[in-house]
Image 1 (tube, rainbow, N blue to C red):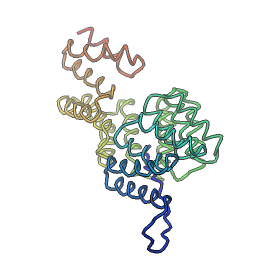
Image 2: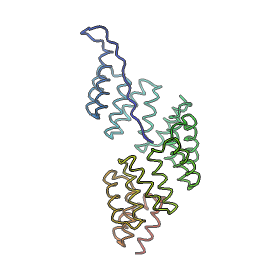
Image 3: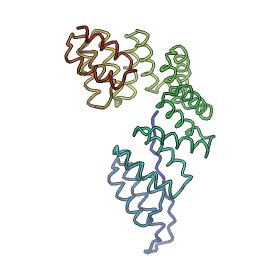
Image 4: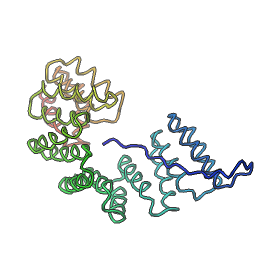
Length: 311
């Protein structure tokens, strides 16, 4: 699900034309200047202003929070978590900081720390859909699919206009191989927001598993039309083209996906599949043996490793 950046804006009270601002208004002005830099897509410049505010007040929770968001923009997750922890230290009930830290923990592979933050939010505000959303993301990562489905369902009850929460539920059903139920939920999501790219990507994945490769291709192309910045969309399209016997075009897209996100194991799997289809045993094994060791439950890995070894 798309994660908006929720900057905190300071309210400044300007007392006439006094040349001698209070420390409170000065630090607030630094916060606003940092926010302006963030809006200009300059997170490094923003951090300089947030740091200035923190030099004036080392307990300024909002400055730590906004600085943490700037770190996220620079993919500096550990630094962001550190700043969020300071924001929470000085403002223990800081909901947005706890929520963002939970997301960062997830992205950093610290699933049990993320679960602690989700539980903290559920205790603090169980009527906020984001508390249940974070809980669902955590349980999904821990492969507790029943609990994740329940959490996403509760989040949707609290925020029924959010189609992404239906896509989250459908994703869990897809993991459980309940394609009929997943497609039913996606139909409901389409009524709310037919322009959600992840919806179309998930439909493509279901079609692929049902061996309707032409429909899979059509759906993922729609996802790319709506959002052309997601590496895994291109990877999926590349996979579908392999199965439609357009192997070179497929490989090109898989390689494009790897350039955008070198850490995606599914793209490496797809390269292995390509080499199996090409009869290149040595190259196929270079990808599939390691994937079988590290991701033994990944779909198609075992099947294509066996095919590679039989070449």
